[in-house]
Length: 449
Image (cartoon, rainbow, N blue to C red; front, side, top):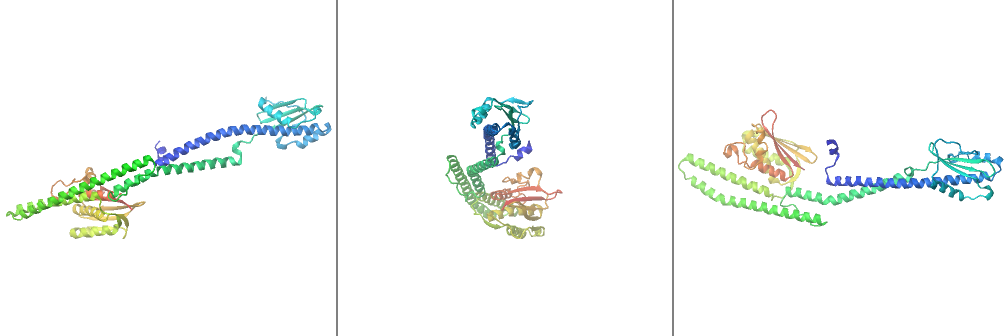
């Protein structure tokens, strides 16, 4: 059952085309069956007339000759069209039968088409049929004496044996198949356009073009609904981004005032704690604003050299964490171009590489092709890894594996969320997995080219 289901295509266009094609083939088969039955009946009539005409001509030749020459004429005509001719009555046949009345009428009509003088007409004409082998037997009782019996093979030509039958069937089926595929793929093209527009909207919500609101009523209605939905999503993202920016702007001033007032505290230990809390609050605020802006996707897509971008992020991270610089390296091609938003991608890889260095004291970055039009970037570290149950949950905003509320050890919980949003906005994805051996984590990024 599973094997049969796998043969069924996933595409709606192909499923529709195959269904229509099967139905068309069945209708063709039924039509050809009806045509074959009718043609076989017609071929029977034609064959019967040919045999009757041939027998009538032979009878005239025999009856017009003297009796002593009839045997020679029979010998001359013997074997023509497979006929077996004799001057004897109908021999006994175990499988013989009387011909139906319509057949006898056809044969008599053909005989009457070749009139003979009144004194030379046959006294009787006996007509029989045989099954094995299929024969049509006509026996004429001559006017003077004796008989003329002709056994003719009855093999009407089947319609499928004619040269044009197969050609006509293939031409009709081929033209019908072409028309079906053309119509189906033309009618389902708007569905593919809608899917592509949805994919483009997910990648670049601010710059995705609107769908043309034209075509059949159903397609135009779907396009209008899609464009309305896209406009609402843009307004929602813009409103959220504006709200986060406004909150960030309004909170920066009181945070700055609190920092200034903290500087006047006489207790140095308390002053450091206050400043640390304010720094953490400011960093969380900056991360939240960056997360909101990243979702807004206001940056335009341009060609990017991903290999150069990865090396740049590694160099910048090495400057921030010089103690881990020796454990940071890049492996892959010197150049690798794709189209994307450079700042968003740089922020995503900076978060991933920064986490690898921060929690794993290493960042080994490998870039290679993972398949057709797909790039794979692996970022490995030497840390303690992540519990299996948390490998997916760490991508949730403000989710931190490190349980402390210290930003220096646990972070703000937005780095991986920002990274995944940026990568998914480019049509890719991020997965996390613990390295074999129980030491270290590997972050795998997939990006379409």
